[in-house]
Structure formats: C-alpha cells, structure tokens
Image (cartoon, rainbow, N blue to C red; front, side, top):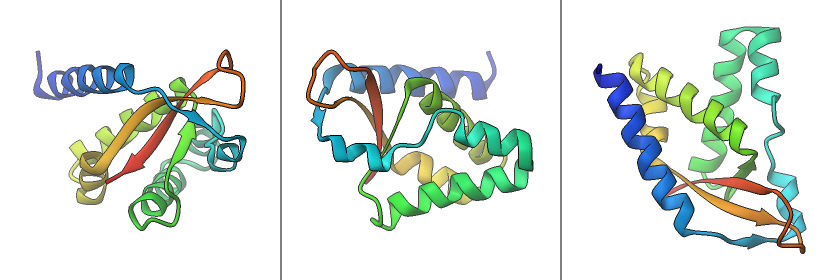
Length: 125
C-alpha cells in the first residue's frame, strides 16, 4: 500500500471516530454558511483547476482568518473537499498542507427537527 493511500485511510478513520462522537444542533442561521453540494465540483468542471483551487483556498482562508467561524456541507461535499485539499497538499502546496492540519470536521444536525439531514461542520483551529 502506498503512503498516500495509507495516509488517506488513517485520516478517514480519525475523522470517523471524531464525527461519531460529536453531534450538535445548529440554528437555522447556519444555512448562511453552507457550501452547496456540487458548488466546487461545478467550478472545477466549468472553469478548470486553477479557478477551483482559488475558490477552495478562499474557503480555507475565511476559516483560518476567523472571518467565518465554520462552513457546513453535505457529507459527499465534505469528502470531495478533503480529498482535494489532501491532493494539493501531497503535490507540495504548503498552504493546503497547513489548512489540512488545522481543519476539523464534526457531524451536526441543522434545524429544529432532530430528524433533518446531517451535515458536516468544517472549522479550523
């Protein structure tokens, strides 16, 4: 097994352990901080890798600088974002490596009804 795959599996296992331990009920205003499903994928497919990387870096910078306390997203979008950040970090981009190390993810329930869909909250420490 190559080092990249092992690192990804380890990170997924750690994320799963952390996410399964923490559930939080967030206010409806949290929807203002949502990254829509497919948003970054659409940028990648439409505008190319350069524009996609800039948009992803923008979201990372908002979290790192504290301009946004968190972003929320659907689980599939979370997986896409983490994979992209890992790929850029493994390609030697030190900013993405730093953001990957600072990132934290937990499951949250958005809305008043506890049966609503789970989302992932992305924060940076």
